[in-house]
Image (cartoon, rainbow, N blue to C red; front, side, top):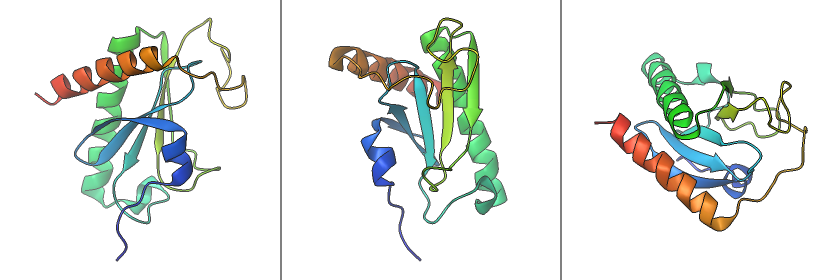
Length: 139
């Protein structure tokens, strides 16, 4: 059995936020949209159905937690959630805060606008807010 290793593209395209019981939570490095990734820390996963039933249920709980946290921190108008995996096959779930005035509204975020680099201070502040909110969700 192989051990979990984070895909290098997912690692390079995101900042670490926190670990939940199953998944690593990461913030995409695109300031156009507050955008979380949930990456189950188990090896060789491509699809949600590759998880056993209890881990599938845990992932759904963690998607709900991440969604609640992202909505509370950003006051977004809509959440987009998806597990595409067309570019990176390692199982990961996108939880994206959407606003009527964002660069892609009302369409999907992929390819709508070039990724915008976070100001380092703003990224740190958002990560701290997300971490605090995730920590309080577990209490």
